[in-house]
Picture 1 (cartoon, rainbow, N blue to C red):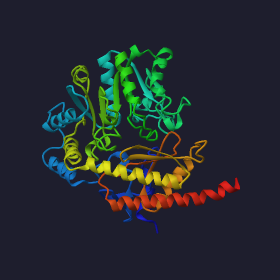
Picture 2: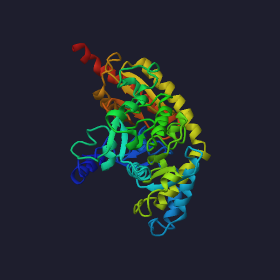
Picture 3: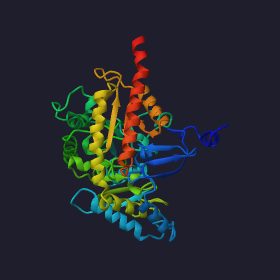
Picture 4: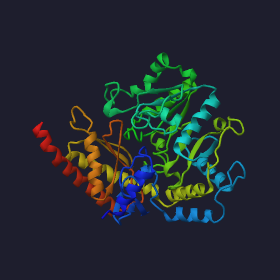
Length: 443
């Protein structure tokens, strides 16, 4: 007899296109904090967080109450038709919290991809330039411009071209796999200096409207630049009048132990985009930037029917309260310290872990078949996620080679849940090693 999950999977395959991938076959019926319950009543520890959306946890009481209260008043008017206070209040809060001692303005979108697209629109309008520079291993969404800015071809871009013009790509500060064959710190962050050479042969700095970068690359493998990287990048941007757009869609809202991850590098971007955990599960993106830049586009040039929905705005205000007033940022710091220590211990015990990287609780393990050659262990990463799922833990892989395990557990996760999840991960690593050893011997 089929389980409820199996029945739902059959219906999903009949009615929903295959292009929408599913990491697990668990159909969730309820979730709270860091725990999800599937259609067969099985409990799953969530180390994925809805791909970085549930920093404050599933169904946080304050978020639920904010949504419920707003839904009882009004759900939609369209901000362009009949505006409302919730939009203004949230915009003012983000303007206050975003880095930079200057006047800021904020507009809202439905998603991170829309936020990035609008940031580029605004940058092009304000600078009267067309060129945009993005990075290898980057991910900025699945819309046309989002795909164009995104680096990885398969599965995100394959067959969906042609793409938007006047977009360029340069190597990122991937120290573990340096694209220039150098080593840190001796390289002195040469990957940032490379932009000067790039301007000679590819596109002039004077033609470039914006450089868009994730502080820590998400889908690209949680690639984390060294301390000098972003300060150097910002100086180059200032030299040529280029706007620096920082994509905080996955890194923002406490994911790294700070409200905005870019604060780890001590710089002030011209524009910041946020989404994912901003509204605790409600669809909402934001573009926050220098007032003189944000206010450039003409009246009617920006917007969207659902953008800044009042329910999502209320949810986001609750999220900010939880992060800033309920001590969740401090909890995130503690969680990061605990995880980093645990992961380094795992690395010492498991040769397959080539590098542990990230900031705060936004951490990743890059899996390799050989620590000397750094051959990516993509099949092993896929197998590890499957083993963990079978034992009741949901984890995600990422990276250009698909060999990185990333951790996005809700910051409200209890110590017991964290320990159980890490124990499953270690148990699965041991099982993976036992499975692979006979293959290596026979080879």
